[in-house]
Length: 158
Image (tube, one colour):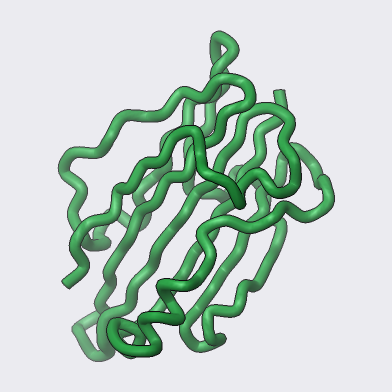
């Protein structure tokens, strides 16, 4: 069965933690229309960064390079994002269980991260990863609607 993966990474620094810059960051989309059909082994990846004014940069990526575990069994798709890298904050001592999607369903799963540079020379940087994953045939606008399942695994970033 078809698996459609969209991975959105929004990244910023402390410059976008407040005021108008934070408003622009918070207005960044968490779902995009899909490009024309590619191969089943690729993912629609979007990167948005503060330095580019959070303008989306779209690429196709091999599914094996996406930070999510996908397994089909018994007519369902098991979805579980990996937390990368392990040293990132906030700590996640207890994660929600994997989601099992039936045909026609999709999940939006969000995780956030905070990093410091080596030796603390530079300031903090931040990521928000949004995984939109559908099981079965979908329309190009599927990720512009409400998901079947929403997992918000965002922690406090301070």
